Each structure stands twice: as C-alpha cells, then as structure tokens.
Image (cartoon, rainbow, N blue to C red; front, side, top):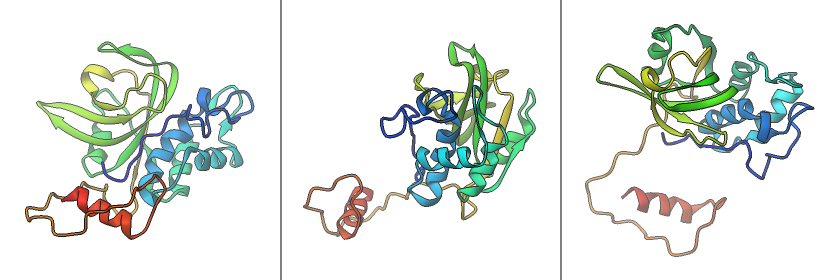
Length: 216
C-alpha cells in the first residue's frame, strides 16, 4: 500500500473547521477525508483541507447531510485519479471485485448497523479502501477509517460488511496501477547511512538516502 495514507477527520489541523454550515470536519468530514487518502497516492501531498475546499466550492458539502454522493467521484477525478465512477452493488459485489482485482482503490459508503461484531457507523460513513485479496473463497478489503471507531486494517466482506454497503465508487491511481511496495534487495547495502536527524516534511538527498537505507 505504498503511496496511500490514513487521515483522521478529527485531526487538529482540520477537525474543527466548518465543513457544511452545520457541522465541522470532525463530525461530518468523512467524505472529503476518504477522498484525500486516495488522492495522496497521486501527488503525495493532498490533505483533507484540499478535498474539503473542493467539496465546499462545488456544492457537495450539504448542510445537515454530510457529503453528496456525486461529490465522491467528482473529487477523485479533480485530484488526478482515473476512471472514477460508481459501480453496481449487489449481494455478491461481483462488479466491485472485478475492479478491485485490477488494482482499483475505492470509497465505500456504509449505512448504520453491525456485522460480525463490527459496528462501522450508526448513521452513514465513507471509508477509503486501498487493497483487496481473496482467501478461502472470501473477499478481504484493507479499509482506512477516518472516524473514531478506528476500523483501519483487513476486514472480510462476507462476515463483517455484507448488507451494510449501499454504494461504492472506484478509481485508479494515476499511472494505471496501484503503487506497490519496493521489492527487498538481496545484495548487501553499500550506500550511505544517513547521519542528520530527519523530520516530517524534510526533503532532498538525506531523505533519499534514508529511504534507500530502510529499503536495504
């Protein structure tokens, strides 16, 4: 899942910002936050503040009602993802699996309710999905939950999601493929071990050296 990021809608950098005139990002910003997680894989810098402003300026931030459904594919497209659109949702999720198997990421809309001991939301909640696999005939999704329930990780559709998903939007990261982890080299590391302290936000040669060192 190299390239994606997990954001929380209640993050102090944007959680208290007004979103739709009736609620702030912490309470109603799951839509733009889910989109930002996917958009980050395109440029490595998009934050929920960026996607929040898009939703607001285009009329997708709806007072007393969160984020409009058609705002999800519009936002993903605006931030560089390809082929963003809704797909048919049925009891078998056939069309969704077809796209996920090709490397598409997604935004799932959950309705209120519980499945397999997991309560995703009591109302409605958008969650980013960035990876997919099939094991023993069951479908597993890597979810990135912006909300306080912290359901980020691998979850099984059949045992923990079925019946709770009324809508799914899929999209492809720019370049045509989902970013993949760097293969682990087999040779001995012969590069430079970085010495200076590196902080979040740093760039340049020392950061590249650290990335190479960690890979090796």
